[in-house]
Image (cartoon, rainbow, N blue to C red):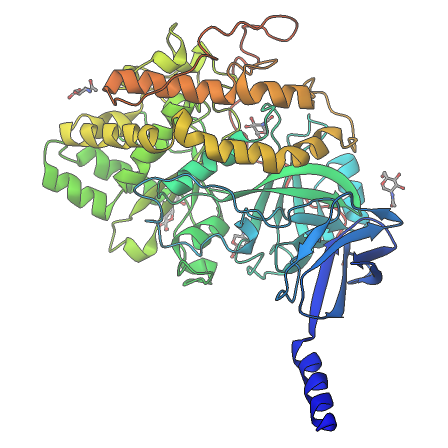
Length: 581
Ligand SMILES: *[C@@H]1O[C@H](CO)[C@@H](O)[C@H](O)[C@H]1NC(C)=O
Ligand SMILES: *[C@@H]1O[C@H](CO)[C@@H](O)[C@H](O)[C@H]1NC(C)=O
Ligand SMILES: *[C@@H]1O[C@H](CO)[C@@H](O)[C@H](O)[C@H]1NC(C)=O
Ligand SMILES: *[C@@H]1O[C@H](CO)[C@@H](O)[C@H](O)[C@H]1NC(C)=O
Ligand SMILES: *[C@@H]1O[C@H](CO)[C@@H](O)[C@H](O)[C@H]1NC(C)=O
């Protein structure tokens, strides 16, 4: 009898003991986890990456624990639930490893089902860390020259993806913290990348003190159900030394994006893997309009791979639009089905107008991609999608009359004042907005556009609907912004803007220095108020705060900080130095 009880006890202990895999990103040499009052050592997963792990046997009660790096303990305690067997990849000093943020909502949310989905790479309940390793990485972050980086590791929520010999192209080098693009397949020819994405941009927030505008824009695009580039904030380190936080994003005019966004099963898998089987993505720079006729040039439609294809398909689309009988609903329906997805085009333009995205198709005939989906094309007809991008100068940044055209305060200007007007605001800009004007000259389509516009305001772009996600951003990402603003620069630049946390705090609400003409909350408020009153939406939009804001002092100048942008130039520095294997 006694033996039997002993047997039971032992057996229970065996059944209920669990092994828990601890994993933490840390920059130090001696990394431990303290569970209750016992301290365990974690080991580095390899010689290169800043991740430390250990499998520790624990009984199935809940525990509190914290990490210790080189003798320094975390200032808070973490909780391990009684059933967990792994911790995700935690980050030393960041209390919440996973935090689900409140999402925007909209009736069309989730309707774009043809992508591979966000996958772990773009799961923003987590903040990824990207580690670039090797001598070339060091050189590139010092001299801003393109090179192959011997090892790049993406530390994601529940996975660590390592890529070797990754091409790294710095850009916007006038900023001390430059932007860069990783092309992970050029050397290896392996396009599996990070969850199917093999061209990945690391953008900064250069002119946005809040850091949030580009991601908020991306999140709205995603919510309204258009095919769109994905965005997440990530920390970047080079050889264990911080570079800062970045806006990690897909590149709209790339095959990597086209494949991930149009040819997935909505659940992490690609339906087309061979990039030769894709359509022909075009990167559309200043002057691009889907117009046809005398004097129309297509050089602004640049093929992503000019070795393999050119922009001849978009000329066919332009001809089809030109020939379209805009008074025939059935002709429009056919055109929409065979040639051009009007809904996603309208959604993209509505967002450009709403956010004051002046570096865009609507205001400067620029910054979009066109993709013809082979699975929806037939014969000599190519079904195109319009993909918007480049969202740094939005929500009131550098908004100026050059692009917005009128003297009135921008958020009070009706979209109608941008239809059928003459453009050609400089020698690069297209003379008109042919595609937009023509489609809107059909009454039904105009109504459709207005419904799209007002629905975005009704469901997302108003203070009440916007606030939960925005305040969650402030709470969740403030530390990331601070990390970025306080990380010493690797190199000098010539740009004068250098944001601090004062700029951050202020611009969440109010206008900022340089060309930051509106606070984020202020902008949403004013925009919603303008649309609400123009269309009689009946939303109750109140604010005591933003109607009579007066800021003055150095930096708060009324001028356009960047009066006119240079036309987008193609990368001319694609030469790669020093292959290091
Ligand atoms: C990194 O590059 C800089 C500048 O080229 C050089 O001075 C430094 O020694 C390099 N550091 C390492 C660890 O290679
Ligand atoms: C970065 O460079 C591109 C051209 O390569 C330009 O269009 C863009 O405005 C620049 N962004 C910043 C923030 O300087
Ligand atoms: C373009 O396609 C050619 C032929 O497949 C390939 O060798 C080249 O690397 C591609 N270029 C880019 C930028 O992907
Ligand atoms: C563009 O590509 C098509 C095939 O896709 C080819 O027939 C045509 O000659 C090319 N045009 C130019 C200008 O290279
Ligand atoms: C633009 O002009 C066309 C005719 O050229 C007209 O049918 C259409 O109603 C105009 N659109 C607006 C919004 O004024």
